[in-house]
Amino acid sequence: MDKPRKISLGDVAIEFTGRAGCNVEDIPVFGVDKKVGITTEPRYQSKDLSRYKVIKPGMFGYNPMRLNIGSIGFCTERHGTGLISPDYVVFGCDNVQLLPEFLYYHTCSTPWKAWLELAGEGSVRERIYFKKLAAYTFLLPSISYQHAAVNILGTLDDKIELNRRMNETLEAMARALFKSWFVDFEPVRAKAEGRGTGLPRDIADLFTASFDDSELGEVPKGWRVGKFVDVATLSRSGLNPSVFEDELFDHYSLPAFDEGCTPKLDVGQSIKSNKFVVSPDSVLVSKLNPRIPRVWLPLTHNSRRSICSTEFLVLLPTNGNSREFLYCLLSNDIFTKEFATLVTGTSGSHQRVKPESLLTLNVVLPPIPLIHLFTTQVTPMLQRINKNIAEIRTLATLRDTLLPKLLSGEIRVKDAEVIVKETI
Image (cartoon, rainbow, N blue to C red; front, side, top):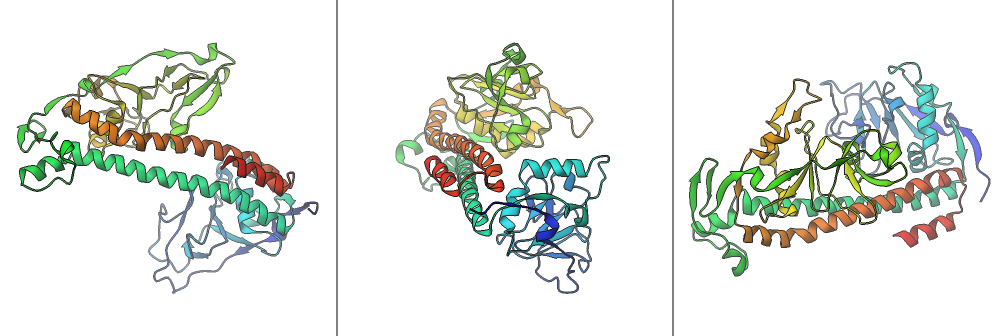
């Protein structure tokens, strides 16, 4: 491999200022989000799109006022050609020297983020236009090495994305089954109307064929309306992790949930406040800003303790209920909306639900044998989701480890390929 050469971004990248003009029909409008990059849901869109800039696959777009906080979008073939705010900067690469995908991975690196932080120092309103960004310097390997590096990192990202999509499908299947049986009561309605349930006979026999009136409306005959406390209880077991300075904890926090539902591995001395203990049979639900649903089915390990932010409520199933049933109940849209009405506090960003309010919510209580049957149906799905999350964690760690080494040419392509092959 040729030795990487030090260059400025301006040597291998070009700013594009082309406008849409009057040819805007059927062209999507993009925004840029810090978490996902290019998004088809911009925060603001003008009625007049003629001044909007054109962005094509292989190009980058960013808001000059938000680049210093990491907000940049890479337009791929999946996005296609689109329009972006006229206030944004759009640039692309000299593909003979620099692959756009290689630069994309560079925008994920620590040197890039550190440089932007310094470039925007002094004001949160600092504008970083392309002329300033062009001064960024980095090591550029040969184009053949770039292709190989992109292929290696892309393989890891593709596997991560595959797992995420699989999890979305499995989650949707579990929620759909819960909604069918315990919200819409579809098997009961089918039997009441003389239709087939589409279920095996031994399962169909667990559903009645008529309804009773209740304070929550119609419920299947023989089912009860009770309180949430009949389904679960709160665990308030806590500890101060800083007392255990060198102990490694699985730390379930709100940021960790928002970044992919993967707990962080933190040592006790780095955790500065008291936490709740997370037990193997628990389900976590955030009491902070419940309009943003955060329900977590933890995967605990015997080798280390698990803890969570006190912004979570730690719930344990009771009275023969299962944590899988509890998780699906908390994740159901109707329950989520009801839960969100329990908030106290006037600030939109800091509204909380009092734990006692959750326990007094009215809920429908199905027969325990039916809950047990439901649990056997969804447990393999939820276990697979947790397995995929653990795999995502491993793959992301490997990608982040290889990233700086591949960007700088520090590691040989063959060595990196062997490492990836052993992991996937």
